[in-house]
Length: 110
Image (cartoon, rainbow, N blue to C red; front, side, top):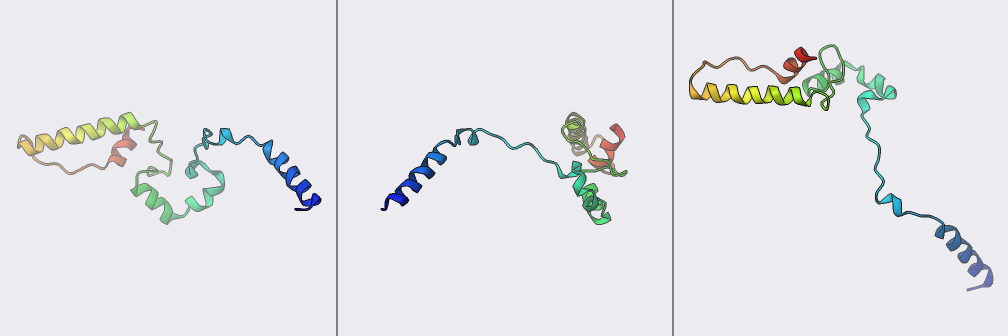
């Protein structure tokens, strides 16, 4: 190895030795939700995309985003009521009713 090559290698190692990458293992990425991204607004204005988001329960009928973290307790109450109603129906105490979607039930609480 020539003197010039050795000097370049040592200089590169000195530069790279200054990097502390230990925090990369513990660092977390910030959460990202595309529904709140103003740059994605044009994409989500598409009626096909909006109907898909509505069917999957991510937006309500008026197009507002349903925050599942905020409404988690409401969803748990509704799911518990559905389970209880199913138990009652199976026991034969009450005739079966038409199922209500979680989205429409959640929209009433908002």
